[in-house]
Image 1 (cartoon, helix red, strand yellow):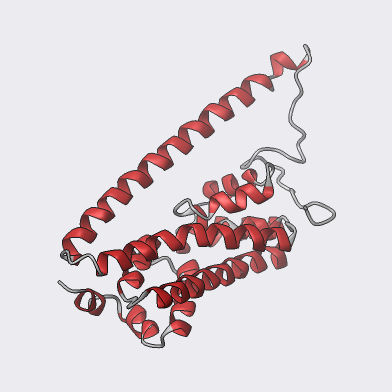
Image 2: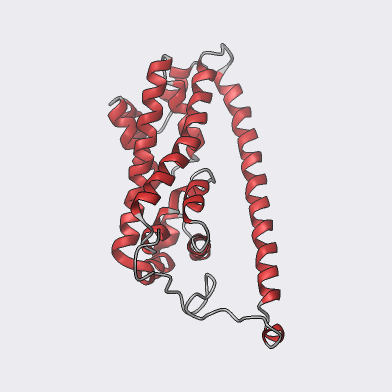
Length: 246
């Protein structure tokens, strides 16, 4: 199957937007941030299959990255306007409609108690996390310049390789369907391994924190967590700083 035959089997909305050239691709990247119909790496490789030459590949990367940043700013703006409490209530009530569980949102918000730039950047290269990470960032009023810079670098790091992979696949002379299938399988395996590793690391870190802050250690120098910064999921969750976090 050729690249054009494969693209013809894409969902109607994707095909329609792709017909508008770079502007359509830009809009498609924005839409992907709000309506994750299928994994983004599949969409990116599909777009890469449509690239005829290297100059156009550079334009595709720029358009997709710009669209991803704008989509992230959309989530950031929603979080900024509504604030941490109303956003969390909305996620609890309606998050399931966009595949966003409350526990997952709480973990994203809790991550921002660490390095804000690094969390934003690294989150853009983690599947699922990259879609919704901007929502708690906006709710916590992170510095916009820092958020935009980290998001731009992260989106470029994620989008570029998959677009290039699709471009190389188009010009490799191999069967696009068969090769793309095995590439997707490999990516899913890597994705699963990364998510498992991150989950195990978080559980280990939470276990150490719980042990160090346990009540029986409080009298010997251990400190109990401040209710105002209770870990994600606790009863009091007001992480909004009085001034933007820098």
